[in-house]
Amino acid sequence: MIIWRRFVNRLMGAVTALSALLAAAALLAVLAYVALNGWRALNLDFFLRLPTPVGVAGGGVANAIVGSLLVIGLATLFAVPIGLGAGIYLSEFGDNRFGDLVRYLADVLSGVPSIVVGIFAYALIVARQGHFSALSGGFALGVMMLPAITRTTEEMLRMVPNALREGSLALGLPRWRTMISVVLPMARSGVTTGIVLAIARVAGETAPLLFTAFGNPFWSVSIDQPIATLPHMVFTYAISPYADWQGKAWGTALLLTGFVCLASLLARRLARQRV
Image (cartoon, rainbow, N blue to C red; front, side, top):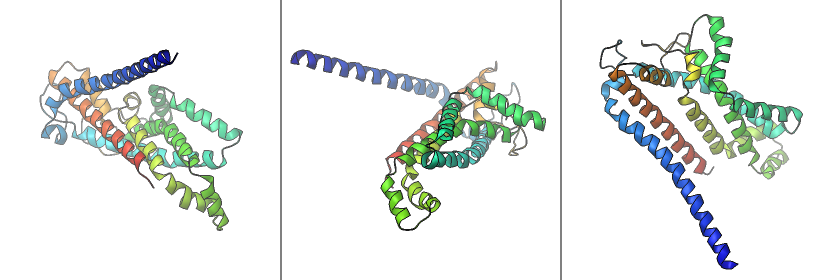
């Protein structure tokens, strides 16, 4: 019996190790393939110049880099305050039916296809404005960030011991001051990690931007006008018949992949920090 148990234990250990190896190998294969096809497109012009006209070699994606940063910044400004507020409510006051409803809706929203969110942003903003805009793109990505920030904030705040809340209240601090001065600082690293992961989650989304930001071959930083973004640039260049554009699509994909990897590493580092 002991020999059989040891055999089963070692077998299951080998199976789980093999599964982890296969998962890591799939990720490494994707990263290696993108890197091998994209590094040739990376040069100074790629980062500093605007796209060239159709059929003309050269140029870069400088406008898409700035556009992506602007759209992601708008999404963060929209999602972080609402997500933090919702997470605080669910953690401190959400043990009721309304809180259960908010949790359910957040979980459902996290599973809604990104293209559906894009259509929603199109109907709500683009159709009313009469034109595409960076603002609508930021709104669409912000909606996608909301459930992750909300649920992460709630879980991180729930991990703060109740004794700290009770001690703060016993010293005479009101509940809102306790939340701001005691509970939130204790959960800061976890909440920040959730925000960074939410940003990484939406950084490569293309479908919502097809209906909102739409893309722009020129330099634009106006939030009320169409704007170039890296995911849209990958889509546009990848389906083109020009080898130069296809090469730039791989280079842009590598740039996006690198951003997501850096964001994930930052999130892991923040998660390991102690307050």
